[in-house]
Length: 498
Ligand SMILES: [Zn+2]
Image (cartoon, rainbow, N blue to C red; front, side, top):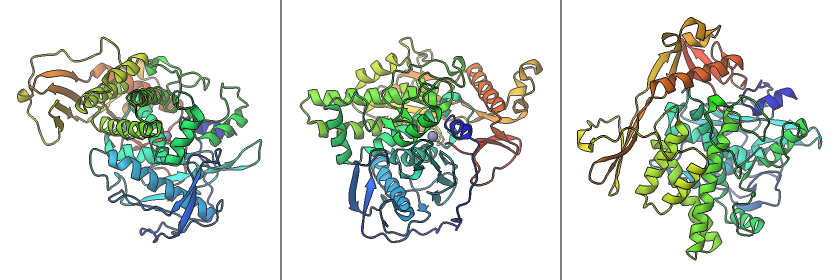
């Protein structure tokens, strides 16, 4: 039981249980036929199903193969159907998310073909490890019902979200930055929400449930309902959990520097653990969505159309933001500023709403932390092929990625290091520059990395990893996910996101 609870806090002791299905995934996907009745949200909301022709993924898409999927649905509730459910969720989420992307997405950073394992073994978890998405199963201690993470739209699309962000931002994979870790989790949850919004049936049910007021908690904002209830049954609510969701997008968490937060605390309070801390950005993003929706309603749009508009507008904005946000120890603020710049370039209709939610969540401060606005002009900058440049008639955004690998022992004395061997290991720290120029080519905003902040942030990361025993000395075995990082050839490298 303890292991299950630890799993949720990002430091799992995964159990490897082979289930006799170790056949190497077929690189070619079977031809699809027939229809599927699939869960639109989560096994805890069984009324939310739809029956559709077996989908195909968008063209192009990063290739994947679902183990146990033979192209047909199989009988609802069977193992074959579970594989078809995962396949359907991947198709529906990719068809919703990939058109929002700033560029074509047709390959993964770590494999030619992502292996999807719907029945990876016994645990209450799921993960993405650059080679595969793996979904585990467990038993609810109260209902005695088996819980299959592969059946939940939220969980499957959250894990896919890690993979999508990894395509957009492979530089974040091994970066030692607490806010970048948490952003990965928030991104997974944002993809889960946007992915679930693919279905009009789902949108109608949300409107009905909230009486058109989507600021209220609803099927979209309660993430991984069944898993949340099972964990509640294990914890009996002693840690401030309530049944019915693993995390909620309608929340009131406000930004605090993660180094000032505890690593573990009650579920109803904020910790710097990445899933817990991810709720701040997730909450801000959802707040923004509600304001975009409300504005469309005041302009006379029908609720269903307003929700569809909100999905497409906010989805496009967050995908572009995730691509361009500079890797910074203050990643939340960097992402919020980037989001604001991009929103201005998209026309700026929701600029005030965005600024409001980011200030309200304390992700952005009124004073901000822009670099001194010099007289710098776009024409002064030597742009290289490595720079990412986004130009519209509103202005130009430039991100200059400057990967930096350091050893903390070169920056902190022996006393600061204690007995932590990770000070001796090479680690990646954030170091990007970001600049925004107006349409006359004058710099109007920007971010430069602070070396001190980056070092302090990395130091916090390695303290957490060391004290939580979260680093393996070498490569980890497939299907074992107790150590999220490994030391490989003297360098700290990530193994997976759960
Ligand atoms: Zn995750």
